[in-house]
Image (cartoon, rainbow over all chains, first blue to last red):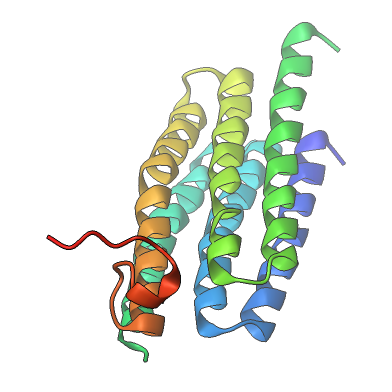
Length: 83
Length: 109
């Protein structure tokens, strides 16, 4: 395994604590965890693209970064309405 | 290992370490506002990883995409953290502004 692949594995493993907080925490905690998970997943995709030397795959990371921002904004809107 | 490789691996290692620290902080903290503080280091981790890609590849297609991703996250994350904190206060207290019972001095205008 190259260093980039190891970094990708560590980043993917780092998604587990975010999932744990989503499952066990409140709705607001889950929104924060999703925010962090979006960043980490986008980075994992970027590092995987670099590890495999597949430059076009970096598009996935870029799209995920933008879409996870939009998705979290929707959850933030729901959180605001929740009383 | 050349100096260039050493710089790339240093940037990559620091970036991934920051992401792991952010995750541990997220799990360790108890309140949603405390947890929100740990989203910030994850953005700097993203900048470091993007810098590692740039240092390895130069201004190529993937280098530019990595820089674009880091720039987007750097711009979007503070806005999102602010929105989340604001939404949490509205959901808990009905208003995001400082309330009288919170021990914060509120100036009447």
